[in-house]
Amino acid sequence: MNSTPLKQRKLYIPQMSYEASACMAAAFRSIGIDAQPSPAGDAHTYELARQYLTGDECLPEAVTLGNFLKVTELPDYDPDKTAFMLPTSNGPCRYGHYLPLAKRVFHHIRGENVLFTAPTSSDGYAGIGDEANNLVRTGWRAAIVSDIIRKILLLTRPYETEPGATDSVYHDALRQICAVLEPRSVPHKERMKKILSTMRQIRDAFRAVPVDTSQDKLLIGVVGEIFCRHNNFSNNEMFRLIEKHGGIVWVSDIAEWVLYTNDEEVWRLDRYGKHFSFQMFGCKLKQAVMRHDEHKIVSLFAQDFQGFEEPHHVRQILELAHPYLPREGSRGEMVMSMGKALWYHQKGAAGVIDISPFTCMNGIITEAVYPRVSREHNGFPIRLFYFDGQQSDVEGDLEIFMELARHYKRRQIT
Ligand code: SF4
Image 1 (cartoon, protein in one colour):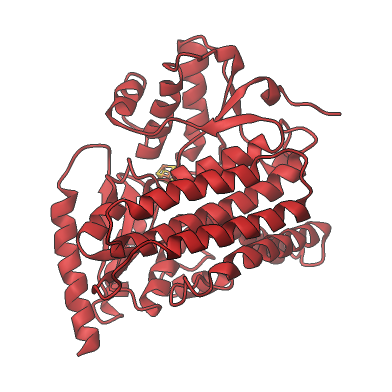
Image 2 (cartoon, rainbow, N blue to C red):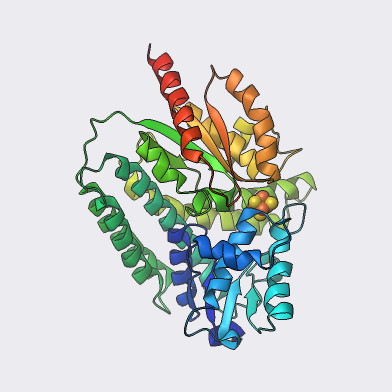
């Protein structure tokens, strides 16, 4: 039996969105790793991170480091028994800098023997041990359920008549679903049955929130950099601000990104003449299993998400993006943001907000292209909001954007 050093440590998962990290931590617990979300961000996060930053780091990098440093202030912190999940990447994005920075801070400056781990398929999930396949399947289900819980929260909360009622259902829902994701040695089929029955109860609890749906709301699509758009602290609670100003948020989810990276692999294999290869077979099989699980869980919410359906295939998003940012020449979040903005337009949104960390190349490129998209779609409002960890008058700018969205919607009706 191939054990893993992670089993002797407490593993902290970066909080991109609270629901995703809570569910992902439960998935790790299902293979015997004591995992939990890293602490949430606040002003102290920046205080801690700033001691080690040079000014070149993007906001998500600073927030991730600051929240890891918060762990060192916990009463039970023991560096020899602590691990942080920190994946990495190659290429121009600063995501590849997170790990060297964290290692420099923890290992070289502070002299603390914490472990960094980054489960990845490229090394067969080395470091996870024998149960890597179980983690991948349960982890994917964790991503789907957390996306659904976020989506139904955002579609319900703007209409609630008892302030706080939807948030309370949301927290209960996360407790319930984590209790189903975390038990050890549960066969996948049996776990799926429990996920489905729990998600049915969760759906019914959201449906029971007292609401007044006669209120007119503006549907606002949210795209942008994956960490910043999901991390409420980094984006100054943008979702709540949109709700405060009469909007409903529909945000691009995390599963969409996973499906995109998988499709990129298929596309690359095709381009290099490997359509009939073992690698392609592996990718297709993985996609089929992922879609099967996703479809089973999402179909429970067909009625709740009517009018807010996600594309059947990620290639629909890429095709929408193609006239502006074709996948042959651009990659990653900029392409997905562009295509999804157009998807929201097709689904009747009143506008789209792109949430981007300051100096992130994805936002810089989409910001240059959005004016053309807007012009070619009857003045459809698309606005990019940058975040750099400073307090700025986001609300003032948002008020102006919401007015534009209201005006656009009126023009569509008359
Ligand atoms: S996409 Fe932008 S914000 Fe996100 S890690 Fe890369 S450089 Fe940083």
